[in-house]
Image (cartoon, rainbow, N blue to C red):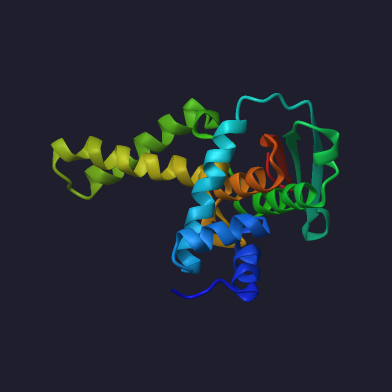
Length: 199
């Protein structure tokens, strides 16, 4: 078996932001396979996030990001449990990255429930009309429409979106990695995106 060396641990830390001992454990559990170790740590982060989910968040920050010479702006509120974490560099970096991501992708909401019902209704009608136009069999139209609608909702919700700076992970993955690293419940509470010329 290959022995775990400092370079491997360093590589894994850079990829995941996990602690030294967690990286050593992951490499050991995954026969020194870095890609498998990344997945191992992601799953562990998910478990940590699930454990923390019920804890109250009375602290946090509001981060603003202005882009394109003042033509586009985003404000995002990120909640955490303690003032200590709100001042943490990784936490603040996360808030900055999320606001830049929102500026780039213009999500309709944080999670699926946030997408307005009228938007879903309108999209459903469009997809149904498209399927009819393409001459799809009557009994397949609902299935095609629902498939396209689910894809639309997934791509429109912040937590489901592929992270613009690393499309291999979603915003949920990024959030869970931070929760695992910091050890507190953290959530994206709300955001607002403003663009000149948009009503």
